[in-house]
Image (cartoon, rainbow, N blue to C red; front, side, top):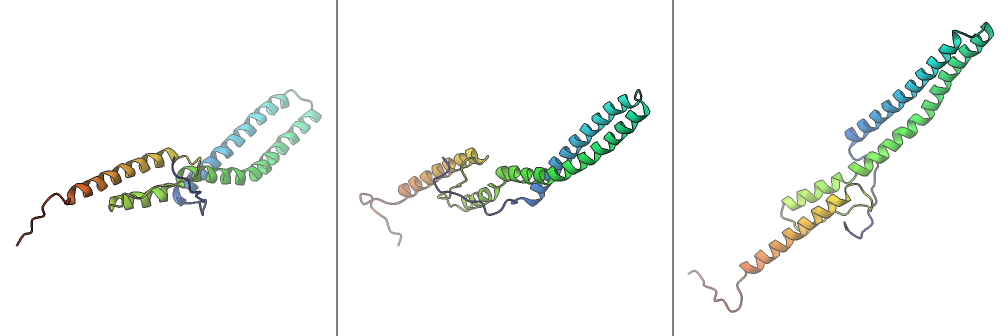
Length: 161
């Protein structure tokens, strides 16, 4: 378990370059899927256009242009939603990184009492558990080393004169 405290993340974007890069890539995939769908529709309509009468041809041509306009509107509406969902999902993974950075820095400076506390369900929660167990082990070893280094009442303490 990574702790009982409730952790509220203050910001959605903690690793700007990585998170925006991820969201933009997802948005590009979204646009490619939409354009691919539109191309498939255009191909199907054009097959019917070659055998259609003049009146049907006009209707099919109008359908082709209307479908492209509809695609643009739907992509414009869903694009921002896809972008925000990509930011949110990337935050679930990258959000805990600043906590890990601080904890590793403190651990490197000899603070073995440091623990990483994450929100329940964070993607990196198992890593926080591993870090906390390692820090606890190091803290226990440090305490036992200090106890061994301290003289006891039974041991005479020699003074250097």
